[in-house]
Image 1 (cartoon, helix red, strand yellow):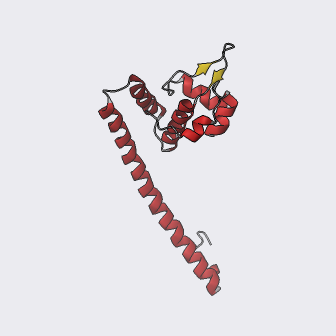
Image 2: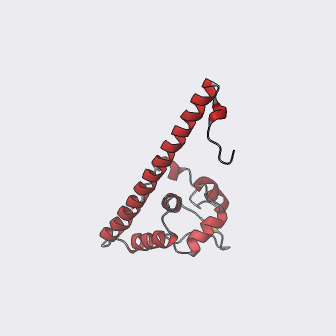
Image 3: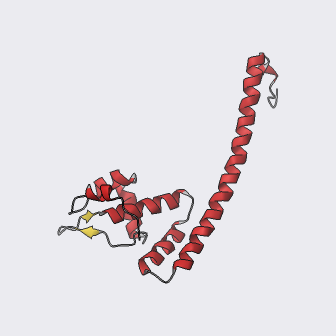
Length: 146
């Protein structure tokens, strides 16, 4: 089950939030909210008004946040959809959910290591430029073709 911050859920009206307000609170566009629903990333059906307008509850916002964060890690939509399906199915498939998350964690750690190496290169280059500029001999920095 999703953890819900009681102070946040108290701020959501009983009738739920409009798609515009849900988009504002989650930081994703209304288009993205509709897309997540259309491609099967939402684990509970989004409530609708009598006129068919979407109304979002705290559980919807919490789940959208999870999807958004998983997506930000590079998790493919197909994998997020599978994770959502497993969550929606309920208990009995926790090992498969865990496996999906562990695989993604390994991928994220590999990306972090690659980014760390890139950051170290950038830091080195910054040090070189700062040192050369301070010494007044920055014109001696390597420039291909000159």
